[in-house]
Length: 493
Image (cartoon, rainbow, N blue to C red):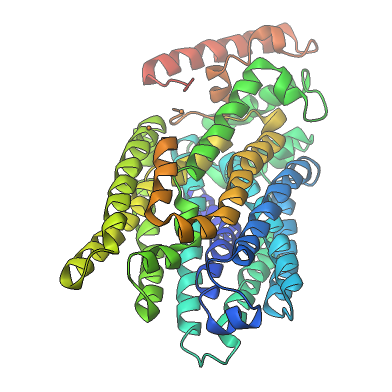
């Protein structure tokens, strides 16, 4: 079936990423609902709102760690299903909430599920992808996160048109989470398990069948067999040195380096401030003098522009430009945009008339610019890079650790403090992210990426491989080294 089936698989699995985006974005407009605020006796800038968003991120932290365990025990596909089931329970609790405790527990469960999905979906996509299209395939995860944000804000915007005395304005957007949960639960049974996980669990014949289903184009039998042999040999080599538990990730030097890279790229993505803007955009626009229905409309439009830029980037550029250069561009460009945003924010209160409207419009432009820049840099690349540099032996646990600590733990802190800080510091808050803002693996198989980190010397192969197999492995090792030299691919240190 080839590329088409691979894309369909990636898009469907990324329904889990859609939940990530929807669950993250849905509270943006919910916390502006007059009925929601009066029902729970709170305000948009209160610690209560911070707690609602922080419990979501906190739940995602623990969900990511759990995903590392279930991916190794249940597999990639079943882990995604488990995440969808947990999300379904959380959604039901949120939309039927009668008091704050139900909302908080529902958000914890939704966050827990998103934590599981946020690290399992990119791994599943990466292990099923062809090396030449891996950027596109895994980039679909970020694309669907953006689509989730779009749907959440427009569902919220439409629901806000009911009378202020109606709970529909917030219960329906929260209930809508159930739809993608049910789609994911019912549909994942029709897609295969990752071929690398099948090989790892000694289901090699099934793995070969899945590889052909994913990548066979009618004439590439040699490539399929070569890829299968490489996966099988790599797994056998890694099993010889694998130690159960999490400690091994920190004791094997090259694995420790990989873990550090994956964690830092997630952390730096959070430190762009993108989630603060996403969660609390209505507060940011209020600080710019944009209020009422206009505020909700601008918030809804904001979530559209990023996914558009992300789509063109992953389709036309990501697998050509690599990973490192867009990250450097993103760091510099986002810093410039946030400095401009802060400068404009400092002028809003003293401005009047058309000048104030001009400053507000420019402020909206730079917030939109941050979303666009993030979508062609940290957005897709943080998931692609983190998923592809992990060796199979620690791929589940390593991705769980990097996502939990680099993404969700940092996100939990910002979710709690941001509404208070935005209320008190206003435009000065941007400088925190500017201060933190002043990594290439292109078109290689996941096994060849191991060579970038020096993992697969012959001395690490199992003793029970015969001489001929070791000779073949040596030849493959040398071929890969030459390929790396020819494509000028460098690991980021």
